[in-house]
Length: 205
Image (tube, rainbow, N blue to C red):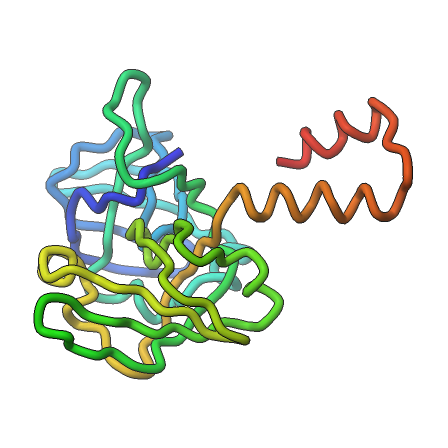
């Protein structure tokens, strides 16, 4: 689990085959889970100035791979007893979004992101969303776009300062919205759920 609070902007040293090597201040250990641009990845090697993670073909298929070439957001997994801020983030990317507009409002920025319509049901007005690993609040939701308002601090301290119209981003939608939708879908398929079915639904999360 993660919180969506970026701990460091790290540098990509190389991305060869399925191995992504990162230069970072974070001292990682083999087997650690680290969210890189919002995707939960496992450390497979450690070196003097960073670490390497492995991206399976499945992961590469669902991520904005072109964003894993220069700088990336990183966040280590939560530890028991950590202060909980941000929101509950799994590090499971649901969709690739595209920034359609950024408006400078003076004391904040409105960012508009387009996603496939099938994901809109899981994006809740005033709910939480994760963009490239950054925990944010959704302001408005339309047919295939949603609006975020980003304060200057977040713009300055994340890669959002480099994003522009046409930039693609990793999107993790609201976990609870996905769970509720999944349960309701199963209930509508069967008027009565057995305890075995309930256990199967829980196990799928």
